[in-house]
Image (cartoon, rainbow, N blue to C red):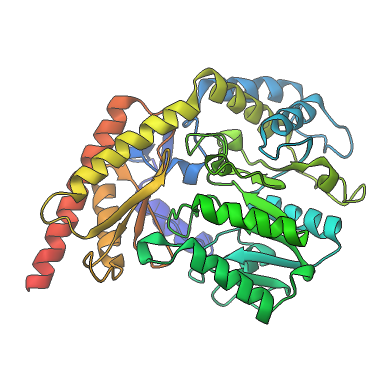
Length: 435
């Protein structure tokens, strides 16, 4: 039987060092639990980075995939199209919150969805420029990295990047940077660096993922929509991490009541199978010429079957409502911990729905980042059987992304482990400071 130590040695010899991993070698998983090759059980508060919103090996998803596998696994949609792709496109067209008739293209990864959204926006407007935001994450391809507003570990040593990409500041109320300041800087960008008549699109996350679960304030998205309209700019909502019921609504933009032009989806769309989509206003989507969109594996039949099952589950099991309740329970627990004496290193608890994070600081006055505490909490939780993820441009945020189908007792067990891990990490830090 393989052991973690053995697999670590084999990985080091066989896998490129640039592929960052953790020390958990998975053997099996079910819903919100994962077991490693040595039989250790973990509660999963990562969900494959918001991919397994419907849990590991959801029976409905697995049944749909098995039934599709009995028919065919690949034809290439360009060669022999199939009903499942068309049905999924129809359903995404119906739910994407643009406020008008939509069309869809299916591809494979989040970065691929982002790149296709940019291609479509450029084709529609006849312009080249794209504005993304500080702290953003839009993928690891060259264009995805250019759009991403976080250097480590995504951009360092990989340039130069494609031209005509600009970054504007993203609001951060915790660090006293308001929507008004961010919009003012965007206007200064137009005045000093690029004519808005050259900008094809804004691309923005309603909740920044890698950036630290910073929620876009409603007033910021409203102003972006207004500015986009005034200059003929396409507004792209990157819903890759926030979408598919994760925030308590199907899409994060819905919390602000703002209607984007294009929506990118991936991660939770297909319950663990690689699939992504761009859905948007038909007028804009149709700007690309025939043959300009797609790919050999785009809209893989197995992943499409999984995605149709995921949409069924979200509706049948009311996963938007469940996400809101999960988020409420997590936030209440974290705020209760943060209010206790000695827990002042928890600077803020924030998020939407079941997309919750807390930021670690040296103290609440200076708000200086405490990435060393963040690392300790993640390691302590792993040792106790809980999988956590960190994020943030200052590397000091812990994000919680349990499956939306997690059993309530498993959620409570995970939160108890989280609380114990925070206490242990803070105690270790206090001891180190005293020494």
